[in-house]
Length: 521
Image (cartoon, rainbow, N blue to C red; front, side, top):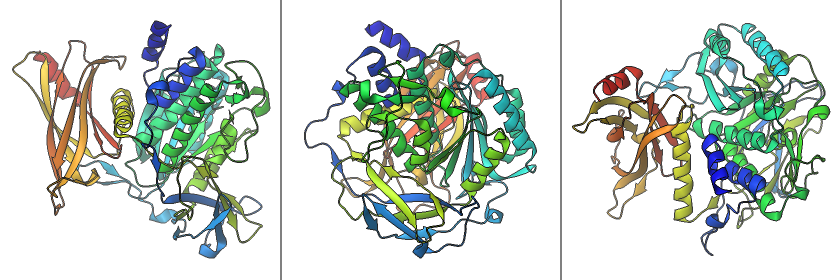
């Protein structure tokens, strides 16, 4: 059994930690939580600033702007909260037509709202995927050559989340990426592997949230496809329900931290006919109704999850390109409000949030709740950070949480080894004072050599403490060396740096540099 579990994990190395735990617990009954138990006194929860992005429409669905603070009332667990800050929708004309460059020459979209297009080929029948591709291309062709919002393109298939085009306002770049991509058959969907679909889909959302945390603006994930299967947890064991809940709550928190909202564009006409439900493991059943306290305590439906986390699920129409446009319009026209909960938070229980309008004729779209962040023991936190770091090395996504600039690589005196120099943006690091009162930053740097299938051939991890300047200048970075072994079949080398808060930055060694290094093995 353990060998089977290992083979399965090796084949699905991009599953997030909680998603993998959920998958193993459901498929094999493995008690993967036993190693995660924390000693008494190591779990603490503190108050946190809650930031909500809110879309307001009238009864006809038209977006309403120009509202002031008195138009909103926010309640948490039934108690009205004091709104500390309200920011109105930003006029589209103020969004940057092209990105500026940061100190390392990377695209910097500042506070612009970002559109992240995901074509779901894993959970969607092939004929509906073909229709979705056609409609996505139709939408892009209807847009001006320079898009009004920075947009990226990626797809999810049985091999995991793939990046097609990084954030850009160049319409033709997105169309070219869509044209280059070869569609794949939904093998998991065909064989009814619902648990794998759910785990891989939650993992994809976590990858998107983690990789985009370096961008300050709101992220709008437009998921084109049927989306994940639902889950009836009433037939699960308590252990399995706990695993499911951990997977959902951690994904919810990552989306909240990254200011990411999901819009689903379902290409099928009748959602009720195809919504797949996992009861126990794969038995048929109905999606469990949400509990009044925690909507995900015993069941899961992605349709409801999207709306619970502040997005919208479009279905039952045959104009996907218009639904994409409507989603993007909503993503550009949101109010941002924040508050600090009035009641002390002393556990990780779900906190229900209600945003109500003073004018009852207006319709509000916002998150329905959140899970307070937990302060884990140092050992558990380090383990989670290391896992995320490994995932960033395997991922095709560009992580932007820590600013990195590649300098150069050179061979060492030991055959088959190299040392790469990377600049780390000090401004993207968390300052932690040393015992001597100096500003320092704890980081973990890692480098991996990958083959053509993105499997790790060799990797090296370094724990570093960087000294930060008391008065940083305009160009403020620290250069760090990262060594790596280069096996003969190395096809790419990725370097990742993670700082204490969990933010990650990644950079790939340029192909020309890698070819030169490999020639000198």
